[in-house]
Length: 362
Image 1 (tube, rainbow, N blue to C red):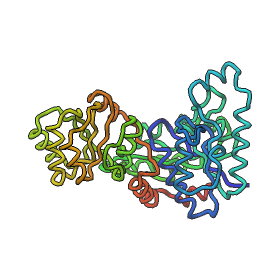
Image 2: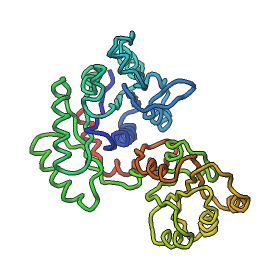
Image 3: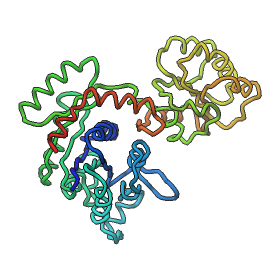
Image 4: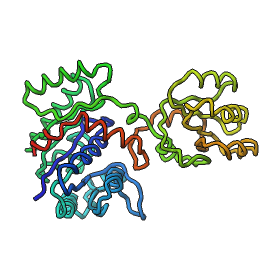
């Protein structure tokens, strides 16, 4: 039988998928055959008319796994599934579906990494909470919580209690996104607390802006924008949003004063802004890309400039401020195209994750 490790988070957006990706990278150095399954997924994409979880697809592509996606993600929570489950309209046992899929993954694995879908209680409405699934698969649990001291410990303690109530063993805790300026102080205090309470601490990772901001590719995908130019440069990250609603000279002065990667959002009829920015893009190399609002056809003068510059241009038929709001509220998710993010993640886990402690717990 394969060893089993279940990764759960104490809340949303704490970086569980990133930690799972990093752990997969490290574990493959220790074990010849490492399998992956995400039993229940809430975010999915369509592949060949089938709904598959984003995280399962990322793992399959990133590590060239030979498993069927339907086994790597047996339950996809699409709209209406919880209602059907409560009304008794689901005839196939979700528990049986997960167990069958897990057996397919385990056949060719020395260790199976199991990614949960949130905190310990997520999925309870269908009788498939993370704690229940981890116990059903008899897996040890790694809890991922967000940086800080009080908040990290409080949320971890709450989830730990539910997992243990279900009969799961906590193999360790990973604290993610600790501010660089407070890293020494916070990491020192956390190590003391976890050591005192005899809870294995398997890693304390510092906050990385590279991992926490969206790439142009993610933005285009999430807001359903059309890529007008520079498609091969969509891996660039966006650190700041500027709405181009001022005079061109004023905008150029603002752009010069910012040392972060910028997404400029402007109306497609602001030819004056587009001309000014594109003609100066060699001087303002902090512009990651431009997002155009509206469906007005670009004039030939702008198209001529685009032929000689590599600036990514996105377009969405929405209001400028609606686009700015949507981009601002995006949840950052790593994709296979985010090569810089993945490289940064691997470097972080190698430096800050104690893979030996995790391996010992197994």
